[in-house]
Image 1 (cartoon, rainbow over the protein chains, first blue to last red):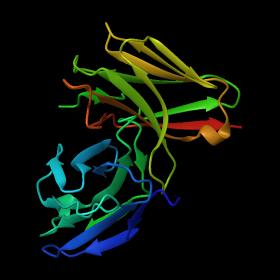
Image 2 (cartoon, rainbow over the protein chains, first blue to last red):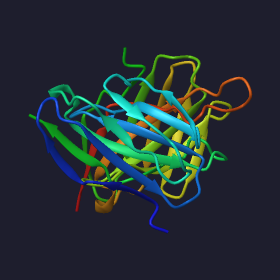
Image 3 (spheres, rainbow over the protein chains, first blue to last red):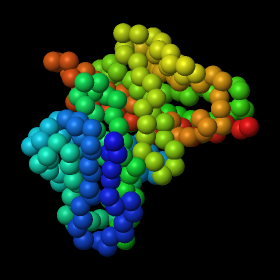
Length: 113
Length: 117
């Protein structure tokens, strides 16, 4: 099992550009999450999904979109990048049985200039 | 509004001694608490958890204590080892009607633990 994989590892964007952060898990987990971590801060939930076709907003959803067409994939879309979106992004998943023990990917470090 | 707070940004201890990491919360509806450990350039990994119906949970060298009246929890690591050097995050969730929290966690800011040989 690769667990939770994220691509890319690093990315630099210009203001106004768009990009998609990819997240894939091979554990057949129903629940998936996107977090961002700003320097010196804890992780904040952006969006989450409880299964294919079902997504919902977390604490900081503005400026992002998600989709969940398969159990494995949960991409995060930034439409118009802003400097405030400079952060490290983590994707996580959990089977839904032990709901709160989440398995995290290695993260994507995004810089918006 | 920081509902979960880790007021110590860093902690330094000697190998073999006890490490105590603290966490306070303000939301009395939280009923499940977790600790995650994070190494540089990696995602967080789950360490230990505790339900609000307990006041202590132990797993090997790691013990979590919960004081609901004080809205305070702590993680004890005994004995501390250099490999324990990492950032430790406290997280909390609220189990909703129906018995699920949907895994929505609220994290503290983290405490950097350094264990010196």
